[in-house]
Amino acid sequence: MGKAVLISYERNGCEMYYEEKTAEKPEKWPANAREQILDTLCECVEEFKKNPSYKTREVLLSLTCEHDLNLNENFGLVRVTEYEVGILNFLYLVGNAYQISSLKTYIYNIITQVTRLQKITSWFNPVINCDEENTYRVIPYDYFLLGTL
Image (cartoon, rainbow, N blue to C red; front, side, top):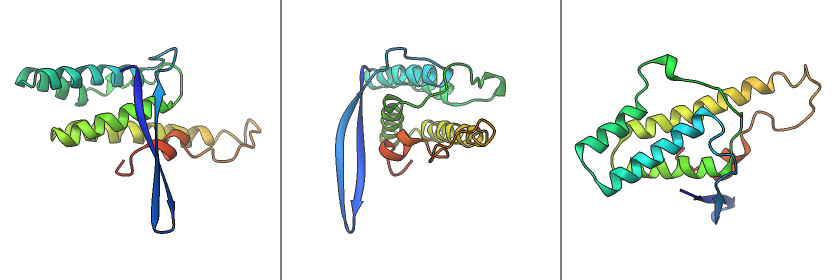
């Protein structure tokens, strides 16, 4: 996947407007373990779409089931890109379409981890004299994540 489709929603009273755009893959992708696993999941989903067999489904399910907590690494660059949000949306829609609930649950876990990390890092702002507003928010999530996520 070289591009990811993003849809941003805006409500104005009873009407809802949306804007569709594409996000290019960042230059240094993957820059952390989360981006690496998302890339691998996309490859497995594409393989499952080409060859929907028991084997390809089991490979996909094995990537989404973390039984060993030592596998969870937070090494690498801390960032959330629009491209990553597009991949999360894509994987969620694929999980819905193919009835792969563990894939949807894994996406929820990723969003939870990123949001928790953002909240914890915002606690350090008074210590480092950072006066930025909206430090609790993950801006790409706010604008481009699907409403169901």
